Image (cartoon, rainbow, N blue to C red; front, side, top):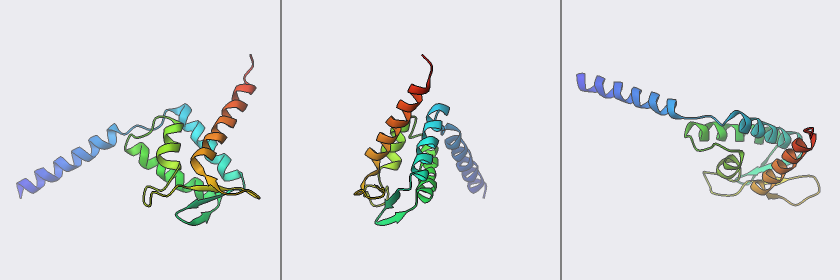
Length: 130
């Protein structure tokens, strides 16, 4: 009985230590991820995951869950890592995610998100007084 209690206590401590070591994205990177996912949501584009199309809002919700998972595993520190490790494809099927905007053929989400990130960064840089 005492061994089971000790084992359970050890497991709780290990779980707590694992949770304590998980690091969220740095604030600047988190701001960029939020802006990027807001752009996806408001774009009017659809998001394909494992053969089904979803709205931008549904895509945003799904990708936020993936971000939470990646942060919990301390696997992301930059927006680019989030795109590569969480927003480019399904961890279940291995299939790439797709983005389809009105009148255009679907494209893989990784390059689409990277292009949107570059556009947002360029707009931000242009708005900063020199």
